[in-house]
Image (tube, rainbow, N blue to C red):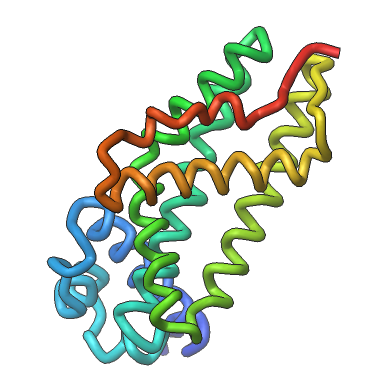
Length: 193
């Protein structure tokens, strides 16, 4: 008699597949052009499973957007590790962060939580995680190079990511400039001792 996965294990796998496929689809297409049926089909699931595991397409989008952002934020680490001076580090981090594909998707997800207050805890949890990971990374970089910052590393990390997200929000809200017009590198206070 063949054994199959326990129901909880299958459920976790289905939820993860839905989330991974949503990430892939939302990375390629705007939120409004991706249907629940498309996400479910890509994950080998039924559309009603999105509602079961996430509650709504909006909720799945918010989860997927932040997963995209967390994955993209990891791409900053090797970029920062290659830099030999604080100035090069600040400029590389700013340039790379502004170009991350997940940033505009995360900005849209945060806007969604304004209209759907029940999704705010998802955004809050993921932003807290992003800030904590960024603080840890920054601490490693500072220790490795003997650099310092003018404020606590936690504040430095939150300020940086707040500026990244804000710059994208401003540029996508119809302002006549680009997100690169903001001196994001100047937000970082990384310097020699």
